[in-house]
Amino acid sequence: GAGRGATVELYPIFEDRFRGAPDGGWPASLPLGGDDVALLTQPGFAAATATAAASFAATFAAAALFFSNCFSLTYIPTNSMVPTLQPGDVVLQDRFFTGTGFGPFFIPPKRGDLVFFEPPPALRALVETAGGGGLDSRQFVKRVAAVEGDSVRVSKAGGVEVRGVPRPGKCPPKVGRQPEFVEARGRVPRGTLYVLGDCPAASVDSRSWGALPVDLVTGRPIVRVWPPARFGPLGGDR
Image (spheres, rainbow, N blue to C red):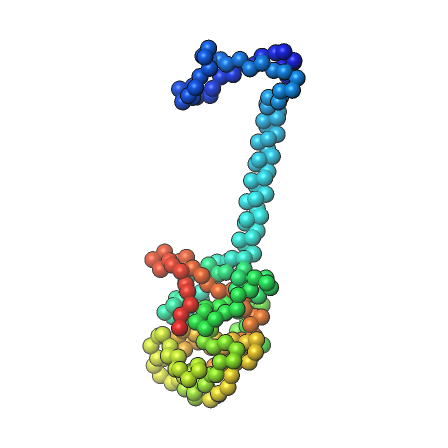
């Protein structure tokens, strides 16, 4: 390094772009005294670069960890939510504000919201009776038709009224023999939701297995990312 009383010659990296050259032109002379800040040496520059790279890598890793825990890409395999969600759609799922695992950040679902959820015991029993399996890692998606305290009426044909207002499906009625439902009337219990598919004829939902406990909600679809032709946000409805 330079000692007391020494001078250092300085050159600009891009001389043609540097305005305000010293009176004597380049190089400029910089006298060094005992109180001057030491110049950055090559090993010091390498250490500073490595530190900056490590900080960037740590920041990127933290952001990736946050994203992977709070958001996920989810494939839609069935037609129970047609036409809103088609088989083969891939959606970005928010689990930070909607999934109950984050406690204080949980935003309770409203009527009309789309929600992903883990199957409650009654739905598990229906799937297992039908010969299905693999429910430990499986999520279902439906639309919130009613929240706690809302009055709900289900007809024998599967028609639903919420607070006295009919909720028709969004897809054409199924042709042929229709399943029969048990007529029911009542209010949605506290801490639960009443969820329906947008295509009732192809949906096994609260009409068949009852209300969904809110603490089984895992997230909500916010953006359809595939196919590209149908890319766009997914909001609440009705």
